[in-house]
Image 1 (cartoon, one colour):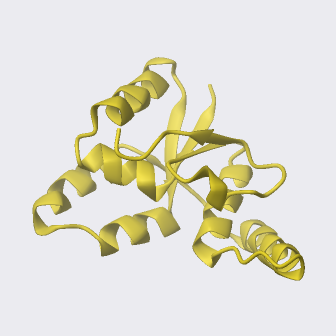
Image 2: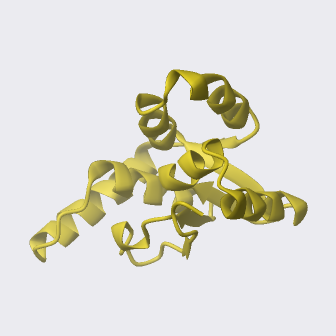
Length: 131
């Protein structure tokens, strides 16, 4: 059983009924893999919810495991931001924390924005946004 962390782009596409994204998520569950979200993704999605999406989001989140964000993940996220900044590339706090959550559960990160996750050691799977 593999762990799969869903980035905000994927969660939004599920909530908006994108058929290919829903099929991919169904495939994850059919294989017996475990889909996760982390608190950052929950916050990002909740912040942008339309009133008509709130109930569906609650149902979706209730069916997903939650990846912890503790000290190891915070330190890893900070390390990435500092290291990339020294090389002239700015990474967002949220993307670094999401990636660290994926590493923390030993899972893959699925996202519509793979370029946001250039960190070494993060297994990123591209699920194109809007599909």
